[in-house]
Length: 186
Image 1 (cartoon, rainbow, N blue to C red):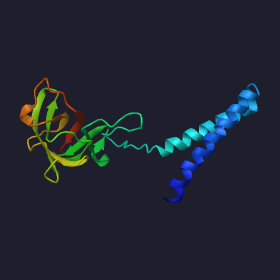
Image 2: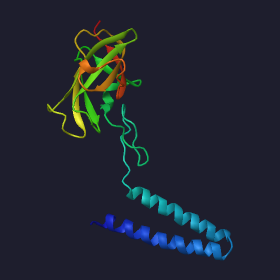
Image 3: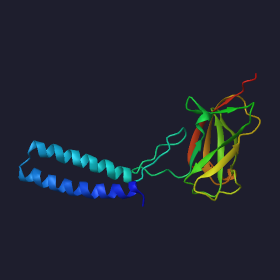
Image 4: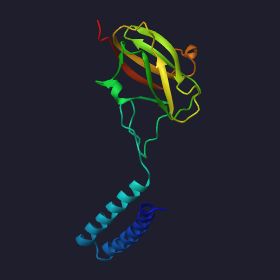
């Protein structure tokens, strides 16, 4: 156990004892304002230390939501690199490639599919591929090929658990991302 790991529990135990003593003094002095201020200060410090020790973490990048100790990670959350986003949309450059890479976090499925829609309806559907060939990790690197026949415009990608042929109107997507396809060379 290093110094930081040893120091925090000792500080919490000491502050808890101090909080109990100050609480008794507030009660014994019938609400003396000086003791009330001290009780609030010790309580706030105690809350700060116990929050830091709880191990809260999160990823607030584009396409990912912040995770706290109070809100669990949603399963099958698809995230993409921040460099791929502009104006809240995933930007796909047709000059480079129509293959998008990202990650699926807290994976619970063995196979994933996507449905690419424009305002008129379905444009394409396909499989989400694991970069290493198998969905066997909790956080898995993925890629999806949107196809070569895309035209510039705004789309949405809906992600589903299962194979592309199992997607029905009743199937609920597990995640969604807005996409803007651009072609810099007219």
